Image (cartoon, rainbow, N blue to C red; front, side, top):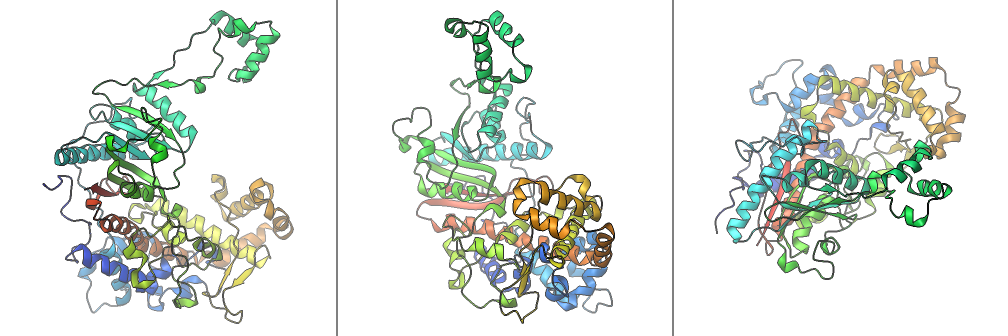
Length: 593
Protein backbone atom coordinates (compact mmCIF):
# COMPACT_ATOMS: atom_id res chain seq x y z
CA UNK A 1 0.00 0.00 0.00
CA UNK A 2 1.52 3.29 -1.05
CA UNK A 3 2.11 6.33 1.17
CA UNK A 4 -0.51 9.06 0.94
CA UNK A 5 0.76 11.91 -1.23
CA UNK A 6 -0.68 14.49 1.18
CA UNK A 7 1.26 13.13 4.12
CA UNK A 8 4.17 15.30 5.36
CA UNK A 9 7.56 13.92 6.29
CA UNK A 10 6.61 13.82 9.98
CA UNK A 11 3.55 12.78 11.94
CA UNK A 12 3.85 16.01 13.93
CA UNK A 13 5.61 19.26 12.92
CA UNK A 14 7.86 19.20 16.01
CA UNK A 15 11.14 21.06 16.55
CA UNK A 16 14.38 19.80 15.01
CA UNK A 17 15.70 19.44 18.57
CA UNK A 18 13.76 16.17 18.81
CA UNK A 19 14.65 13.02 16.89
CA UNK A 20 11.14 11.49 16.89
CA UNK A 21 7.50 12.18 17.66
CA UNK A 22 7.75 9.97 20.76
CA UNK A 23 10.67 12.01 22.12
CA UNK A 24 8.80 15.27 21.47
CA UNK A 25 5.57 14.03 23.09
CA UNK A 26 7.33 12.79 26.23
CA UNK A 27 9.22 16.08 26.60
CA UNK A 28 6.02 18.09 25.97
CA UNK A 29 4.09 16.23 28.67
CA UNK A 30 6.98 16.47 31.11
CA UNK A 31 7.34 20.23 30.57
CA UNK A 32 3.63 21.05 30.81
CA UNK A 33 3.27 19.14 34.08
CA UNK A 34 6.54 20.04 35.80
CA UNK A 35 7.35 23.63 34.83
CA UNK A 36 5.85 25.72 37.63
CA UNK A 37 6.35 28.93 35.65
CA UNK A 38 4.47 27.51 32.68
CA UNK A 39 1.69 26.22 34.90
CA UNK A 40 1.30 29.63 36.48
CA UNK A 41 1.36 31.57 33.20
CA UNK A 42 -0.98 29.10 31.48
CA UNK A 43 -3.93 28.92 33.82
CA UNK A 44 -2.79 30.64 37.00
CA UNK A 45 -3.38 34.31 36.13
CA UNK A 46 -6.70 36.09 35.93
CA UNK A 47 -6.45 39.71 34.81
CA UNK A 48 -9.40 40.76 36.98
CA UNK A 49 -7.36 39.84 40.08
CA UNK A 50 -4.15 41.45 38.84
CA UNK A 51 -4.17 44.43 41.24
CA UNK A 52 -6.50 43.17 43.99
CA UNK A 53 -3.63 41.88 46.15
CA UNK A 54 -0.35 43.44 47.18
CA UNK A 55 2.36 43.50 46.02
CA UNK A 56 0.37 42.27 43.02
CA UNK A 57 0.49 39.30 40.69
CA UNK A 58 3.59 40.45 38.81
CA UNK A 59 5.85 40.85 41.83
CA UNK A 60 4.52 37.80 43.65
CA UNK A 61 4.51 35.33 40.78
CA UNK A 62 7.09 36.31 38.15
CA UNK A 63 10.61 35.10 39.03
CA UNK A 64 12.43 37.95 40.76
CA UNK A 65 15.43 37.82 38.43
CA UNK A 66 13.13 38.37 35.42
CA UNK A 67 11.27 41.41 36.67
CA UNK A 68 13.68 44.26 35.89
CA UNK A 69 14.34 42.99 32.36
CA UNK A 70 10.61 42.55 31.60
CA UNK A 71 9.68 46.00 32.88
CA UNK A 72 12.40 47.87 31.01
CA UNK A 73 11.46 46.44 27.61
CA UNK A 74 8.89 48.14 25.40
CA UNK A 75 6.02 45.70 24.68
CA UNK A 76 6.92 45.10 21.02
CA UNK A 77 10.63 44.71 21.88
CA UNK A 78 9.66 42.13 24.50
CA UNK A 79 7.53 40.24 21.96
CA UNK A 80 10.49 40.17 19.57
CA UNK A 81 12.68 38.75 22.33
CA UNK A 82 10.13 36.06 23.17
CA UNK A 83 9.35 34.91 19.63
CA UNK A 84 11.76 36.20 17.01
CA UNK A 85 15.23 37.14 18.31
CA UNK A 86 18.11 34.72 17.75
CA UNK A 87 18.89 33.60 21.29
CA UNK A 88 21.80 31.43 20.22
CA UNK A 89 23.87 34.55 19.60
CA UNK A 90 23.59 35.78 23.20
CA UNK A 91 26.95 35.93 24.92
CA UNK A 92 27.39 33.80 28.07
CA UNK A 93 29.00 36.82 29.78
CA UNK A 94 26.14 39.23 29.41
CA UNK A 95 26.22 42.66 31.01
CA UNK A 96 23.54 44.93 32.54
CA UNK A 97 20.26 44.97 30.67
CA UNK A 98 20.76 41.48 29.28
CA UNK A 99 18.09 38.82 29.80
CA UNK A 100 18.72 36.53 32.79
CA UNK A 101 19.82 33.00 31.96
CA UNK A 102 16.71 31.41 33.51
CA UNK A 103 14.43 33.56 31.33
CA UNK A 104 16.38 32.68 28.17
CA UNK A 105 16.11 29.01 29.09
CA UNK A 106 12.35 29.33 29.60
CA UNK A 107 11.88 31.08 26.24
CA UNK A 108 13.88 28.34 24.52
CA UNK A 109 11.74 25.69 26.22
CA UNK A 110 8.52 27.30 24.98
CA UNK A 111 9.89 27.64 21.46
CA UNK A 112 11.06 24.04 21.20
CA UNK A 113 7.80 22.61 22.59
CA UNK A 114 5.64 24.68 20.21
CA UNK A 115 4.70 22.87 17.01
CA UNK A 116 6.14 24.49 13.90
CA UNK A 117 3.68 26.66 11.98
CA UNK A 118 5.48 27.33 8.68
CA UNK A 119 3.27 26.74 5.65
CA UNK A 120 3.72 25.46 2.11
CA UNK A 121 0.64 25.35 -0.18
CA UNK A 122 -0.57 21.87 -1.15
CA UNK A 123 -0.23 22.86 -4.82
CA UNK A 124 1.82 25.67 -6.44
CA UNK A 125 -1.37 27.14 -7.93
CA UNK A 126 -4.84 26.50 -6.59
CA UNK A 127 -8.14 27.38 -8.34
CA UNK A 128 -9.23 30.96 -7.70
CA UNK A 129 -12.64 31.20 -6.07
CA UNK A 130 -15.23 32.66 -8.47
CA UNK A 131 -16.86 35.85 -7.20
CA UNK A 132 -20.22 34.07 -6.97
CA UNK A 133 -18.70 31.46 -4.60
CA UNK A 134 -16.60 33.93 -2.59
CA UNK A 135 -19.63 36.09 -1.70
CA UNK A 136 -19.60 37.03 1.98
CA UNK A 137 -16.00 35.93 2.55
CA UNK A 138 -13.39 38.26 4.02
CA UNK A 139 -9.76 38.01 2.92
CA UNK A 140 -8.94 35.61 5.76
CA UNK A 141 -11.83 33.30 4.87
CA UNK A 142 -10.92 33.31 1.16
CA UNK A 143 -7.39 32.21 2.11
CA UNK A 144 -8.68 29.46 4.40
CA UNK A 145 -11.30 28.11 2.01
CA UNK A 146 -9.05 28.25 -1.05
CA UNK A 147 -6.24 26.31 0.58
CA UNK A 148 -8.34 23.86 2.59
CA UNK A 149 -10.61 22.98 -0.35
CA UNK A 150 -7.51 22.24 -2.43
CA UNK A 151 -6.05 20.19 0.42
CA UNK A 152 -9.25 18.18 0.90
CA UNK A 153 -9.52 17.51 -2.83
CA UNK A 154 -5.97 16.17 -3.05
CA UNK A 155 -6.38 14.09 0.12
CA UNK A 156 -9.61 12.60 -1.23
CA UNK A 157 -7.87 11.67 -4.49
CA UNK A 158 -5.10 9.91 -2.56
CA UNK A 159 -7.62 7.98 -0.46
CA UNK A 160 -9.61 6.94 -3.55
CA UNK A 161 -6.47 5.79 -5.37
CA UNK A 162 -5.31 3.77 -2.37
CA UNK A 163 -8.70 2.20 -1.64
CA UNK A 164 -9.94 1.89 -5.18
CA UNK A 165 -13.17 3.63 -4.14
CA UNK A 166 -14.23 7.30 -4.17
CA UNK A 167 -15.50 9.07 -1.07
CA UNK A 168 -19.24 9.65 -1.39
CA UNK A 169 -19.76 12.64 0.94
CA UNK A 170 -17.92 15.26 2.97
CA UNK A 171 -19.52 16.05 6.35
CA UNK A 172 -18.79 19.58 7.60
CA UNK A 173 -19.10 19.81 11.39
CA UNK A 174 -20.50 23.24 12.26
CA UNK A 175 -20.75 24.54 8.69
CA UNK A 176 -21.89 28.08 9.58
CA UNK A 177 -22.42 30.00 6.33
CA UNK A 178 -21.06 26.90 4.52
CA UNK A 179 -18.24 28.71 2.72
CA UNK A 180 -16.12 25.54 2.61
CA UNK A 181 -18.99 23.29 1.58
CA UNK A 182 -20.13 25.69 -1.16
CA UNK A 183 -16.60 25.79 -2.57
CA UNK A 184 -16.22 22.01 -2.51
CA UNK A 185 -19.63 21.53 -4.13
CA UNK A 186 -18.78 23.98 -6.94
CA UNK A 187 -16.51 23.37 -9.95
CA UNK A 188 -13.79 22.21 -10.21
CA UNK A 189 -14.33 20.06 -7.08
CA UNK A 190 -18.00 19.03 -7.46
CA UNK A 191 -18.16 17.20 -4.12
CA UNK A 192 -21.27 16.02 -2.26
CA UNK A 193 -21.51 18.01 0.97
CA UNK A 194 -23.44 17.33 4.18
CA UNK A 195 -23.52 20.63 6.10
CA UNK A 196 -24.32 20.13 9.79
CA UNK A 197 -25.32 23.37 11.52
CA UNK A 198 -27.20 24.07 14.76
CA UNK A 199 -28.26 27.66 14.03
CA UNK A 200 -31.14 27.97 11.58
CA UNK A 201 -30.23 31.61 10.86
CA UNK A 202 -26.80 30.50 9.63
CA UNK A 203 -28.40 27.83 7.49
CA UNK A 204 -30.89 30.28 5.96
CA UNK A 205 -28.06 32.66 5.13
CA UNK A 206 -26.04 29.80 3.61
CA UNK A 207 -28.94 28.81 1.36
CA UNK A 208 -29.27 32.40 0.13
CA UNK A 209 -25.58 32.31 -0.81
CA UNK A 210 -26.14 28.95 -2.54
CA UNK A 211 -28.76 30.62 -4.73
CA UNK A 212 -26.44 33.51 -5.57
CA UNK A 213 -23.62 31.11 -6.41
CA UNK A 214 -25.82 29.09 -8.75
CA UNK A 215 -25.80 25.89 -6.67
CA UNK A 216 -29.49 26.27 -5.87
CA UNK A 217 -32.55 27.97 -7.32
CA UNK A 218 -35.05 30.13 -5.54
CA UNK A 219 -38.43 28.48 -5.15
CA UNK A 220 -40.72 29.74 -7.89
CA UNK A 221 -43.69 31.73 -6.66
CA UNK A 222 -47.06 31.71 -8.44
CA UNK A 223 -49.46 34.44 -7.35
CA UNK A 224 -52.29 36.73 -8.41
CA UNK A 225 -50.12 39.87 -8.62
CA UNK A 226 -53.03 42.31 -8.98
CA UNK A 227 -54.74 41.04 -5.86
CA UNK A 228 -51.41 40.78 -3.99
CA UNK A 229 -50.53 44.44 -4.64
CA UNK A 230 -54.03 45.52 -3.60
CA UNK A 231 -53.45 43.83 -0.21
CA UNK A 232 -49.98 45.38 0.13
CA UNK A 233 -51.34 48.89 -0.50
CA UNK A 234 -53.85 48.41 2.35
CA UNK A 235 -51.25 47.08 4.79
CA UNK A 236 -48.82 49.03 6.95
CA UNK A 237 -45.38 48.79 5.25
CA UNK A 238 -43.84 47.53 8.48
CA UNK A 239 -46.02 44.40 8.20
CA UNK A 240 -45.38 43.54 4.55
CA UNK A 241 -43.35 40.48 5.58
CA UNK A 242 -45.90 39.33 8.18
CA UNK A 243 -48.02 36.62 6.57
CA UNK A 244 -50.72 36.69 9.28
CA UNK A 245 -51.06 40.48 9.07
CA UNK A 246 -51.47 40.28 5.30
CA UNK A 247 -54.18 37.63 5.69
CA UNK A 248 -56.07 39.81 8.19
CA UNK A 249 -56.04 42.75 5.77
CA UNK A 250 -57.12 40.48 2.91
CA UNK A 251 -60.17 39.33 4.89
CA UNK A 252 -61.01 42.95 5.77
CA UNK A 253 -60.97 43.68 2.04
CA UNK A 254 -63.43 40.84 1.45
CA UNK A 255 -60.95 38.49 -0.23
CA UNK A 256 -62.42 34.99 -0.27
CA UNK A 257 -60.53 31.86 0.79
CA UNK A 258 -60.49 30.72 -2.84
CA UNK A 259 -58.92 34.00 -3.93
CA UNK A 260 -56.47 33.90 -1.01
CA UNK A 261 -55.31 30.47 -2.16
CA UNK A 262 -54.06 32.10 -5.38
CA UNK A 263 -51.68 34.36 -3.47
CA UNK A 264 -48.42 33.22 -1.92
CA UNK A 265 -48.00 35.54 1.07
CA UNK A 266 -44.77 34.03 2.44
CA UNK A 267 -41.83 36.38 2.93
CA UNK A 268 -38.64 35.91 0.92
CA UNK A 269 -36.94 34.36 3.95
CA UNK A 270 -39.58 31.64 4.06
CA UNK A 271 -39.03 30.65 0.44
CA UNK A 272 -37.16 27.39 0.04
CA UNK A 273 -33.97 26.95 -1.95
CA UNK A 274 -34.28 24.03 -4.38
CA UNK A 275 -31.31 21.85 -5.28
CA UNK A 276 -31.16 19.84 -8.49
CA UNK A 277 -29.09 16.66 -8.47
CA UNK A 278 -27.15 16.22 -11.71
CA UNK A 279 -24.57 13.63 -12.67
CA UNK A 280 -21.03 14.97 -12.29
CA UNK A 281 -22.06 18.04 -10.30
CA UNK A 282 -21.68 18.71 -6.61
CA UNK A 283 -24.55 18.84 -4.15
CA UNK A 284 -25.28 20.26 -0.70
CA UNK A 285 -27.59 18.77 1.92
CA UNK A 286 -28.24 20.71 5.12
CA UNK A 287 -28.86 18.98 8.42
CA UNK A 288 -30.22 21.00 11.33
CA UNK A 289 -28.96 19.75 14.64
CA UNK A 290 -26.77 20.54 17.61
CA UNK A 291 -24.17 17.81 17.88
CA UNK A 292 -23.61 16.67 21.46
CA UNK A 293 -21.58 13.60 20.56
CA UNK A 294 -19.80 11.92 17.64
CA UNK A 295 -22.55 9.41 16.74
CA UNK A 296 -23.83 10.56 13.34
CA UNK A 297 -26.81 8.19 13.07
CA UNK A 298 -29.26 11.08 13.45
CA UNK A 299 -27.40 13.13 10.85
CA UNK A 300 -27.25 10.29 8.34
CA UNK A 301 -30.96 9.53 8.69
CA UNK A 302 -31.71 13.00 7.28
CA UNK A 303 -29.84 12.41 4.03
CA UNK A 304 -31.70 11.90 0.77
CA UNK A 305 -32.56 8.23 0.38
CA UNK A 306 -31.81 7.42 4.04
CA UNK A 307 -35.12 8.44 5.62
CA UNK A 308 -36.16 4.95 6.74
CA UNK A 309 -32.89 3.19 7.52
CA UNK A 310 -29.25 4.21 7.50
CA UNK A 311 -27.19 1.85 5.35
CA UNK A 312 -23.70 2.95 6.35
CA UNK A 313 -22.06 0.30 4.15
CA UNK A 314 -23.01 2.31 1.05
CA UNK A 315 -21.50 5.51 2.39
CA UNK A 316 -17.82 6.47 2.37
CA UNK A 317 -17.52 9.87 4.02
CA UNK A 318 -14.86 12.28 5.23
CA UNK A 319 -15.48 14.54 8.25
CA UNK A 320 -14.05 18.01 7.62
CA UNK A 321 -14.13 21.37 9.32
CA UNK A 322 -12.39 24.73 9.31
CA UNK A 323 -12.27 26.03 12.88
CA UNK A 324 -15.01 23.95 14.42
CA UNK A 325 -15.67 25.44 17.84
CA UNK A 326 -14.69 23.74 21.07
CA UNK A 327 -15.82 20.16 21.42
CA UNK A 328 -17.05 20.01 17.80
CA UNK A 329 -13.46 19.22 16.85
CA UNK A 330 -13.56 16.28 19.27
CA UNK A 331 -16.81 15.03 17.76
CA UNK A 332 -15.39 15.27 14.26
CA UNK A 333 -12.26 13.31 15.19
CA UNK A 334 -14.19 10.71 17.21
CA UNK A 335 -16.68 10.26 14.38
CA UNK A 336 -14.20 8.10 12.46
CA UNK A 337 -13.95 5.69 15.40
CA UNK A 338 -17.70 5.53 16.10
CA UNK A 339 -19.23 5.55 12.60
CA UNK A 340 -18.43 2.85 10.00
CA UNK A 341 -19.24 5.25 7.16
CA UNK A 342 -16.62 7.84 8.17
CA UNK A 343 -13.45 6.80 6.33
CA UNK A 344 -11.32 9.89 7.01
CA UNK A 345 -11.17 13.10 9.03
CA UNK A 346 -9.46 16.44 8.40
CA UNK A 347 -10.23 18.86 11.24
CA UNK A 348 -8.83 22.34 11.91
CA UNK A 349 -9.84 23.29 15.45
CA UNK A 350 -10.43 26.64 17.12
CA UNK A 351 -12.15 28.23 20.14
CA UNK A 352 -10.27 26.14 22.69
CA UNK A 353 -11.97 28.15 25.45
CA UNK A 354 -15.25 26.45 24.46
CA UNK A 355 -13.83 22.98 25.04
CA UNK A 356 -14.75 21.32 28.30
CA UNK A 357 -12.55 19.56 30.87
CA UNK A 358 -12.62 15.83 31.48
CA UNK A 359 -10.37 15.11 34.45
CA UNK A 360 -11.44 17.57 37.13
CA UNK A 361 -9.07 19.01 39.77
CA UNK A 362 -5.82 17.10 40.45
CA UNK A 363 -5.33 15.04 43.59
CA UNK A 364 -1.73 15.90 44.43
CA UNK A 365 -0.39 18.86 46.46
CA UNK A 366 0.21 21.64 43.92
CA UNK A 367 2.74 24.48 43.89
CA UNK A 368 1.75 28.03 44.87
CA UNK A 369 -0.74 26.60 47.42
CA UNK A 370 -3.36 25.98 44.71
CA UNK A 371 -4.30 23.20 42.25
CA UNK A 372 -2.28 22.74 39.09
CA UNK A 373 -3.37 24.92 36.16
CA UNK A 374 -6.17 26.42 38.22
CA UNK A 375 -6.20 30.20 38.14
CA UNK A 376 -6.53 32.42 41.16
CA UNK A 377 -10.22 32.40 40.42
CA UNK A 378 -12.89 30.22 41.98
CA UNK A 379 -15.21 30.20 38.93
CA UNK A 380 -12.77 28.11 36.93
CA UNK A 381 -12.50 25.60 39.77
CA UNK A 382 -16.25 25.02 39.56
CA UNK A 383 -16.05 24.45 35.81
CA UNK A 384 -13.34 21.80 36.27
CA UNK A 385 -15.65 19.87 38.60
CA UNK A 386 -18.02 19.07 35.72
CA UNK A 387 -15.75 16.26 34.44
CA UNK A 388 -17.25 16.16 30.94
CA UNK A 389 -16.29 12.84 29.27
CA UNK A 390 -16.33 14.66 25.90
CA UNK A 391 -13.76 17.21 27.08
CA UNK A 392 -9.98 17.61 27.03
CA UNK A 393 -7.90 15.49 27.00
CA UNK A 394 -9.10 12.98 24.38
CA UNK A 395 -6.17 10.56 24.37
CA UNK A 396 -5.41 7.92 26.96
CA UNK A 397 -1.75 8.95 27.09
CA UNK A 398 -2.50 12.55 28.06
CA UNK A 399 -5.41 11.53 30.32
CA UNK A 400 -3.25 9.18 32.40
CA UNK A 401 0.18 10.83 32.21
CA UNK A 402 1.95 10.33 35.55
CA UNK A 403 -1.25 8.56 36.68
CA UNK A 404 -3.10 11.85 37.16
CA UNK A 405 -3.24 13.25 33.61
CA UNK A 406 -2.62 16.71 32.16
CA UNK A 407 -5.12 19.53 32.71
CA UNK A 408 -5.84 22.78 30.90
CA UNK A 409 -8.41 25.09 32.43
CA UNK A 410 -10.43 27.67 30.50
CA UNK A 411 -7.91 30.45 31.18
CA UNK A 412 -5.07 28.44 29.65
CA UNK A 413 -7.22 27.38 26.69
CA UNK A 414 -8.44 30.92 26.07
CA UNK A 415 -4.84 32.18 25.94
CA UNK A 416 -4.06 29.52 23.29
CA UNK A 417 -6.24 31.52 20.87
CA UNK A 418 -4.19 34.74 21.15
CA UNK A 419 -1.71 34.36 18.22
CA UNK A 420 0.93 36.76 19.63
CA UNK A 421 3.14 36.42 16.53
CA UNK A 422 0.52 38.44 14.64
CA UNK A 423 0.14 41.25 17.18
CA UNK A 424 0.81 44.73 15.80
CA UNK A 425 1.90 47.66 17.92
CA UNK A 426 -1.49 49.35 17.59
CA UNK A 427 -3.45 46.21 18.42
CA UNK A 428 -1.18 45.43 21.37
CA UNK A 429 -1.56 48.92 22.78
CA UNK A 430 -5.34 48.63 22.46
CA UNK A 431 -5.83 45.37 24.31
CA UNK A 432 -3.15 46.12 26.92
CA UNK A 433 -5.09 49.31 27.68
CA UNK A 434 -8.43 47.45 27.85
CA UNK A 435 -6.98 44.85 30.23
CA UNK A 436 -5.44 47.61 32.35
CA UNK A 437 -8.83 49.33 32.67
CA UNK A 438 -10.51 46.02 33.59
CA UNK A 439 -7.94 45.26 36.28
CA UNK A 440 -8.01 48.71 37.91
CA UNK A 441 -11.83 48.78 37.91
CA UNK A 442 -11.88 45.46 39.82
CA UNK A 443 -9.58 47.02 42.42
CA UNK A 444 -12.06 49.89 42.75
CA UNK A 445 -14.90 47.36 43.13
CA UNK A 446 -12.97 45.59 45.90
CA UNK A 447 -12.14 48.80 47.77
CA UNK A 448 -15.75 50.00 47.60
CA UNK A 449 -17.32 46.70 48.63
CA UNK A 450 -18.89 45.68 45.33
CA UNK A 451 -16.89 42.43 45.42
CA UNK A 452 -15.22 40.60 48.28
CA UNK A 453 -12.01 38.72 48.87
CA UNK A 454 -12.00 34.92 48.79
CA UNK A 455 -9.48 32.81 50.70
CA UNK A 456 -8.66 29.37 49.35
CA UNK A 457 -6.81 28.36 52.53
CA UNK A 458 -6.32 29.95 55.94
CA UNK A 459 -7.31 33.62 56.08
CA UNK A 460 -4.05 34.36 57.86
CA UNK A 461 -2.26 33.53 54.60
CA UNK A 462 -2.48 36.83 52.70
CA UNK A 463 -0.36 35.70 49.75
CA UNK A 464 -1.49 36.28 46.18
CA UNK A 465 -1.79 32.52 45.73
CA UNK A 466 -4.27 32.08 48.57
CA UNK A 467 -6.65 34.94 47.80
CA UNK A 468 -8.84 36.02 44.92
CA UNK A 469 -12.10 37.89 44.40
CA UNK A 470 -15.55 37.18 43.03
CA UNK A 471 -14.98 39.49 40.04
CA UNK A 472 -17.67 41.23 38.02
CA UNK A 473 -17.28 40.09 34.41
CA UNK A 474 -18.56 43.04 32.39
CA UNK A 475 -17.84 41.93 28.84
CA UNK A 476 -17.44 44.39 25.99
CA UNK A 477 -18.48 48.04 26.09
CA UNK A 478 -19.11 50.59 23.36
CA UNK A 479 -15.99 51.79 21.54
CA UNK A 480 -16.26 55.26 23.09
CA UNK A 481 -15.85 53.73 26.56
CA UNK A 482 -12.21 52.89 25.83
CA UNK A 483 -11.13 56.45 25.04
CA UNK A 484 -10.19 57.06 28.69
CA UNK A 485 -10.31 55.32 32.05
CA UNK A 486 -13.04 57.68 33.26
CA UNK A 487 -15.15 56.85 30.19
CA UNK A 488 -14.58 53.14 30.84
CA UNK A 489 -15.69 53.36 34.48
CA UNK A 490 -18.78 55.38 33.60
CA UNK A 491 -19.65 53.00 30.77
CA UNK A 492 -19.25 49.96 33.01
CA UNK A 493 -21.45 51.47 35.73
CA UNK A 494 -24.12 52.34 33.16
CA UNK A 495 -24.11 48.80 31.76
CA UNK A 496 -24.27 47.17 35.19
CA UNK A 497 -27.18 49.34 36.34
CA UNK A 498 -29.30 49.40 33.16
CA UNK A 499 -28.68 46.12 31.31
CA UNK A 500 -31.16 43.40 32.26
CA UNK A 501 -28.41 40.76 32.02
CA UNK A 502 -26.78 42.29 35.11
CA UNK A 503 -29.81 42.58 37.40
CA UNK A 504 -27.89 40.94 40.25
CA UNK A 505 -25.51 43.92 40.31
CA UNK A 506 -27.99 46.79 39.89
CA UNK A 507 -28.50 47.61 43.56
CA UNK A 508 -24.95 47.07 44.79
CA UNK A 509 -23.41 49.07 41.92
CA UNK A 510 -25.87 51.92 42.46
CA UNK A 511 -25.17 51.92 46.21
CA UNK A 512 -21.39 51.49 46.14
CA UNK A 513 -20.42 53.23 42.88
CA UNK A 514 -23.22 55.72 42.22
CA UNK A 515 -21.46 58.61 43.97
CA UNK A 516 -17.93 58.08 42.66
CA UNK A 517 -16.33 61.31 41.44
CA UNK A 518 -14.12 62.00 38.46
CA UNK A 519 -11.37 62.96 40.91
CA UNK A 520 -11.44 59.53 42.58
CA UNK A 521 -11.40 57.78 39.22
CA UNK A 522 -8.37 59.85 38.22
CA UNK A 523 -6.65 59.00 41.51
CA UNK A 524 -6.94 55.28 40.81
CA UNK A 525 -5.61 55.74 37.30
CA UNK A 526 -2.64 57.76 38.58
CA UNK A 527 -1.90 55.18 41.29
CA UNK A 528 -1.69 52.27 38.87
CA UNK A 529 -0.51 53.96 35.65
CA UNK A 530 3.14 53.10 36.24
CA UNK A 531 2.20 49.44 36.75
CA UNK A 532 0.58 49.01 33.33
CA UNK A 533 3.89 47.59 32.07
CA UNK A 534 3.56 44.80 34.66
CA UNK A 535 0.28 43.76 33.09
CA UNK A 536 1.47 43.98 29.48
CA UNK A 537 4.60 41.94 30.33
CA UNK A 538 2.61 39.17 32.01
CA UNK A 539 -0.03 39.10 29.25
CA UNK A 540 2.74 38.80 26.65
CA UNK A 541 4.36 35.96 28.59
CA UNK A 542 0.99 34.23 28.94
CA UNK A 543 0.18 34.43 25.22
CA UNK A 544 3.68 33.31 24.24
CA UNK A 545 3.61 30.39 26.68
CA UNK A 546 0.17 29.35 25.46
CA UNK A 547 1.67 28.41 22.07
CA UNK A 548 2.57 25.22 23.96
CA UNK A 549 -1.03 24.89 25.16
CA UNK A 550 -2.26 24.80 21.57
CA UNK A 551 0.49 22.33 20.68
CA UNK A 552 -0.62 20.09 23.55
CA UNK A 553 -4.28 20.20 22.44
CA UNK A 554 -3.39 19.30 18.84
CA UNK A 555 -0.96 16.58 19.97
CA UNK A 556 -3.67 15.08 22.20
CA UNK A 557 -6.02 14.82 19.20
CA UNK A 558 -3.31 13.18 17.12
CA UNK A 559 -2.59 10.72 19.94
CA UNK A 560 -6.27 9.81 20.19
CA UNK A 561 -6.26 8.70 16.56
CA UNK A 562 -2.92 6.91 16.91
CA UNK A 563 -4.21 4.98 19.93
CA UNK A 564 -7.00 3.52 17.76
CA UNK A 565 -4.57 1.76 15.43
CA UNK A 566 -7.03 -1.12 14.95
CA UNK A 567 -9.29 1.37 13.12
CA UNK A 568 -6.93 4.13 12.02
CA UNK A 569 -4.42 3.27 9.30
CA UNK A 570 -2.61 6.59 9.33
CA UNK A 571 -2.77 9.94 11.12
CA UNK A 572 -0.75 13.13 11.17
CA UNK A 573 -0.76 16.90 11.76
CA UNK A 574 0.37 19.59 9.32
CA UNK A 575 -0.21 23.25 8.50
CA UNK A 576 -2.82 24.24 5.93
CA UNK A 577 -2.88 28.06 6.18
CA UNK A 578 -0.38 30.88 6.36
CA UNK A 579 -0.10 31.78 10.07
CA UNK A 580 -0.19 35.50 9.23
CA UNK A 581 -3.57 35.04 7.56
CA UNK A 582 -5.05 32.41 9.88
CA UNK A 583 -3.08 31.40 12.99
CA UNK A 584 -5.25 28.36 13.80
CA UNK A 585 -3.56 26.57 10.94
CA UNK A 586 -2.94 22.98 12.11
CA UNK A 587 -5.09 20.22 10.61
CA UNK A 588 -5.49 16.83 12.32
CA UNK A 589 -5.84 14.10 9.68
CA UNK A 590 -6.90 10.49 10.12
CA UNK A 591 -7.37 7.75 7.51
CA UNK A 592 -9.34 4.60 8.33
CA UNK A 593 -8.03 1.11 7.59
